[in-house]
Length: 438
Image (tube, rainbow, N blue to C red):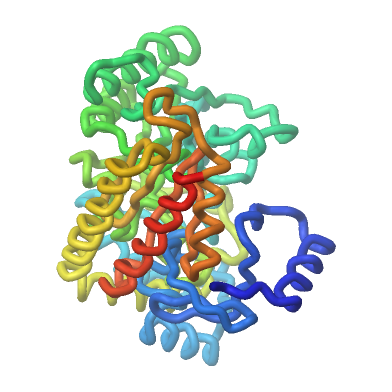
């Protein structure tokens, strides 16, 4: 049982006094260090981590030894090179390395610091390349919290309240097979109903396709609840974009970088986007993001877009080491994601069969979630029960994070041992059993 000490409570009180509130509200975790499968708090409590620190540490907490060594070595040479004003070889080398992971025809990279910045970059690039203004996003999407990306985000009211208006953005409906928005009989029928809404409502009555620069989509909706759409949905988005000279942007910030078993999550749907955005895991634990576009779009005018810390040398050194590790071990990583994901999904499906409060389980690879409900018939959301399960798991040494209205995401490091995955799932199952019995 985890012991919450006075020191932990004191840090949390100090945090509330001096820091703007973010989302640190799930449990009293004050991290001190982490390595591999485990995180440790300042009281010495040890936790199995099923969060990868929000899908950042895909290859183990605090990165692996090669990632850390690359960052340390670069610190002793030069940390910041003003890459947007001066030339430096390391970011160029990383961009060349990164582009080898993309389909033929991708040849331009912009480096920034976070997922929201990567999406801001994509907004600007899409408008520049098409000379059009409007953006299409989806309900339940999350693309960031800075104003441009926030305009496309539509997950929770708290994200947007008091920050608008958000001009030039329309939201369409992203198919949720568990909560079918059109009462469709099959997932594919639902997907096609959503496409019909996009084509015959949004693009027919609200924004002309002649004025739409981009469609932004997450291959799997992250903060919206780990919603996996039918393949036909992405294929139809690709068709609409191609027919109307609209840029299709794939937000891979959470779902990319091997999390689903593929480097690009969009590849699971047999679709190639026009611009990809990446962050989180790409930096190996340090702040880094990338916006990757087709070469055919051309370049940006000098001075039209830049940023002080984009291409920071320490972050890029860590990212390059991480990418080299990924490329060297790609086949084994694909196998690990597939086998571990299959094991976790088997456990989750058993929970769904055994407990009334487990309404749905879903995901791809090691990007998985369980959604909790009051009962299976009404599918009424159960956020209190969800939060109680997260707290119970924390008290027994397992870190979890929520997603959507009443779901829990399960995103352990890809490299986590099978033993610790089993232990973590045992803790999770016991927490579900206890909360279900109340």
